[in-house]
Image (cartoon, rainbow, N blue to C red; front, side):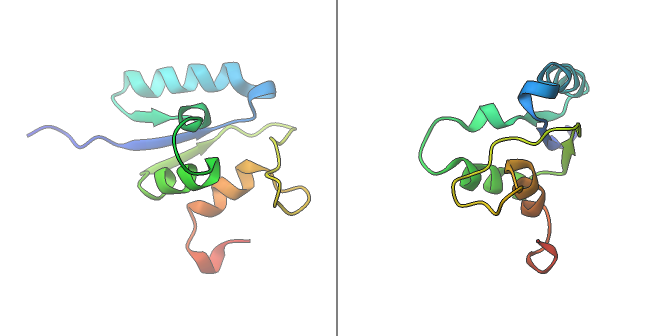
Length: 98
């Protein structure tokens, strides 16, 4: 019987850590993990946050490369809460979301 595929979402601010994210994604894929990054969700119906939330809900892990910057803020975001913070919320039960 084949091993189950583990879904991973890999997050990083592109301008600051994009090259590191590429290398981490490559290493995880070489280990047989199914890795997606934000750019994988730029096409198709629905908002970016809706697509990210749906994928993160089925992930076994969310890996965030943390640096000094944060990414773009969605138009309806609270000040200082970029996509990463909102992606982080997607992996938490509703009562633990900020």
